[in-house]
Length: 193
Image 1 (cartoon, one colour):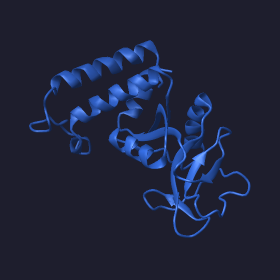
Image 2 (cartoon, one colour):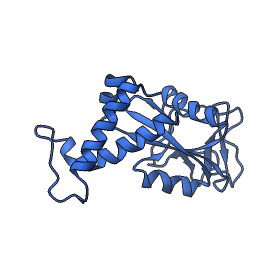
Image 3 (tube, one colour):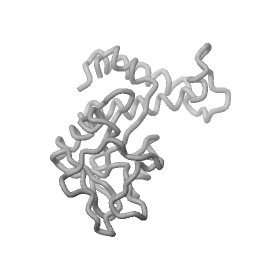
Image 4 (cartoon, one colour):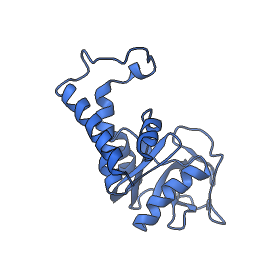
């Protein structure tokens, strides 16, 4: 949960960024001097993400681990719709790559008491899954006997106990997105987000 102090800081930053770039579509965006990595992303993009995170943090539908934030809009939709919703929000489907990230996603699943899709899909080989970017899945939290060898179960979901199982991609599941944030260490230091 966001502290009142952090809420004020984040709201002020978001307000300043939104008002300073209202109507700006990227032309003439001021860059941060001496920060070449940050200069690749326009400042106005941060304002949208900050507002997004503030809204979800106030509703306790956001959690963090490391440099990732995990958030839900509370909607239950199929895999492709989840994928598109996360992409439009500037993130991707939650893809836990270690126990800490899995626990962060599980905290949202537990809060809503709903299964959620993970950013892990099966290929043409039964029982073989990978992250959406094609990298191998090195950390798992699979139920016993999973993934099953049923041909139509090409998606992976987190169950309400935090364990994973394969499922078909046309089920309606809770949307949980992940976001990588350069601002996350700052937000954590300011108010213990």
